[in-house]
Image (cartoon, rainbow, N blue to C red):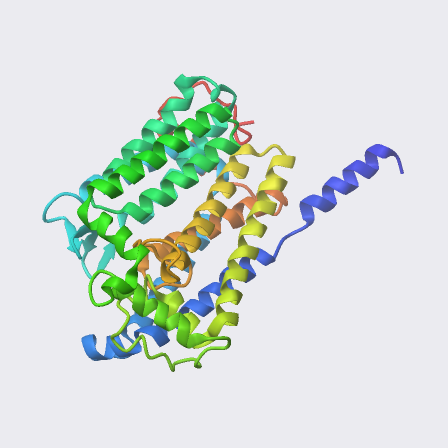
Length: 410
């Protein structure tokens, strides 16, 4: 066999290699989420709604909706997502503006973060995460060779600043941190100069620190985070109850369903602090199991990034890298908050916490990563002809006219 044939055989073997670790981790986390939402919410749901399985039913319903959304998203070629980047960004910004309109946005605990659509509510910040990933991946793919110039470098930064400003008006400080960190990581991977990147990271850190210091409730969160036991019946109540849950769990936990902290001691036990209830019922080893699943999931996504870079599929690489950073970062922040490592933030645990918008967007992100893997392994059938024609219309990307330097356009 000639060297050319050997290379072709190696490339074919690489393209046919399919990684099933990614869906296994997602299914495992989603299954744990169903069990923990049922366990953590049963007492609160029975007392508030008269149905102990109220939140479990909602969670399963949203999980099914997320599965349908994932199925649809996985059928859309990456080239269409790239060309829809600007409309998706405009749609996300429109939702972020709409949620601030009195009478449209729904206020919960002093924050305007939800839009009520009949019996369901939509959280625009979660939609913005998905749309911003698509936009930054598409823009950086087309302009990565020009990122060393300030003119091209400032475009994604300006967009990021505008989205962050809208989120801070809600306010949603946690989403700002996650989206900003993800965007900066993508800019760095795209080839931005180190001085530009370090300057931007420094400015972002100073800006976030200033926002925390000039806002009274954020400053209180920082002070109670440093010494939660000093205000265990005040601002530090939620964190101290979460730490008690960790302490009660010890090595192997108190057993599934036997948590005491979920009995009206720990607020938001089935959403933001579900990891604390998991640690109480499953113990240290249960917590390490969940952390391990996130670590393997992130590793699996980074393998896709490496494969995409090898095949020079830059849009796929940047998009998958953004998904990996966003999921890993949000999981780290959520678990860090629950364990007292970080100040309190209103972020859910991906695939596990109860929350419709977050769960559906996580399923959509998984579907995009699955599509990336399918295209890299050559197991997709391509888009329909009519879909390809529609995606070529200039309206879908006004700044891409005459610029076809993407691997999809090629």
